[in-house]
Length: 87
Image (cartoon, rainbow, N blue to C red; front, top):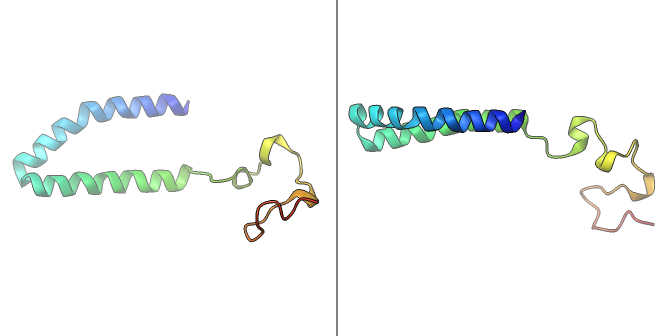
């Protein structure tokens, strides 16, 4: 489903962006059009990534590799060096 949305967005962007860029350049000049299109990317992409990006399985309520619960002896925290929690 995510791939479908990505492909649909790419198709819509390919269809809409040249017309939008042409209209902006014709009315405002290329510098303002460039700034406006850049802001459009930031305004659309940043909130979308912020809402949908999950950095770890724990953020989605999951455990790595399908584990049901983490083992206490192999839990690695951000402050421990690699391998410090292994016993």
